[in-house]
Image 1: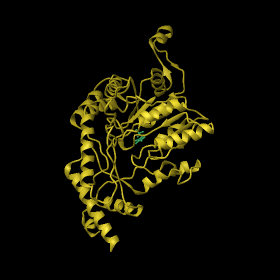
Image 2: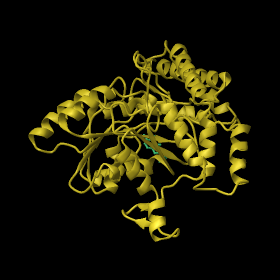
Image 3: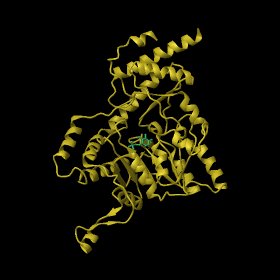
Length: 403
Ligand SMILES: *Cc1c(COP(=O)(O)O)cnc(C)c1O
């Protein structure tokens, strides 16, 4: 690896993900900074309406993170002690922590080895067993991993059959199309109760920190909106009866509000979402084309849905090759990453009693996966560099091994 050692450290690293901020975003934020309301003004409802229009959902509740949105979603669905919540192990910790916040038990359903999403076959089998043992889940949280839509229709059918609610963790997937033929976007909640988005800067669009919960159910929307702001209600009837200062705390809520500064940035970014998805799909297609001859497994495109390609994940020949390629690419200034360590490997979850090897397909995936850089503002030159470095390394590794 002498060549890589000679590459000077001053070459800026290419991150695995990065926000794109334009002058119009800055102008939108500046306008709020010069206005009367930095929070609880008009910008948040405007952003919520724009999200509803884009996704085809009736209600949006904008909050300060996807983690908060997941927590509110669990609370709105009355998740509490004694309840079970199931999710996939190949996700960020927040997808499971939300259930623990509510005092519920978490369990994991293994992934599909081709899509890396929750396996619907494994889910169906686990539901059958759980029914016999009288341990059915109250909520299942599928995650549109890397932006690729989960088979929500099938999960929706299982939800009806076994009587659980569904929260889609679409932190990776704003802009993804669930069903091309039906023109259904992720976030429309066509087969789920609630869908959650993240607007962290590495995600598809950003508000700095931020998230949203989408739903078509007015009761759930109302409850999440109330819990977002301390569980307080305040309206004309109450004010008329008691006086304009009067409000009522009717539930134990939080301060999970999004600011107007964030919402203005979100609305401005949302205008470019369509273009971002197109660009991300082009970058993914180009990777698949240019890397096709290398000894690695490429992420497949789906026929029935459009991924938002939040992450571009390849799998290498063995855990040893993955480790070597990862270390060398990092040295070359390529900001590769690994998404995700099976969630139950985390010490906190180990203490809850989960054993390594619990979900074999997730373990097998994790051992060989690397996320390559992919973001909307990525240039052709940057992608060339990633492709060049990866091809060089893999050629080298396999030559050395053969000798
Ligand atoms: C990023 C992410 C979250 C948490 O998002 P925040 O907005 O940072 O709270 C939750 N789930 C998944 C799958 C994520 O990738």
